[in-house]
Image 1 (cartoon, one colour):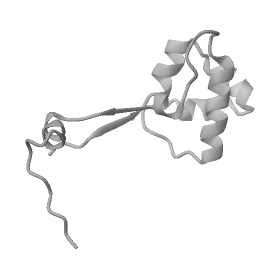
Image 2 (spheres, one colour):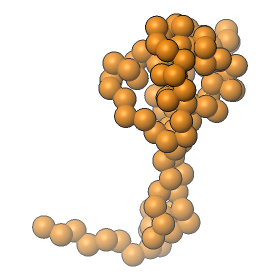
Image 3 (cartoon, helix red, strand yellow):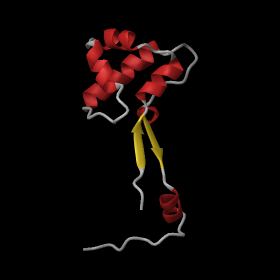
Length: 98
């Protein structure tokens, strides 16, 4: 079975909201390099505090009228066809091992 794809969506989110990396760095009080590291396509390891600061920073820069940015907006989750079949009940379920 192929692996589930969970991807970090910060780059796309910032582009769709028109948020610039330099502005986010300024609002968060971090370096441009720190924001560059967060903008990787791989999901970064974040503490609750860093995630909270990121969300506050993003929301303070979002255009008026755009929806509030939530943690779920930062993560994209997609399934392979095999995983969809398994979830829908047409696949073979794994045995529970005790």
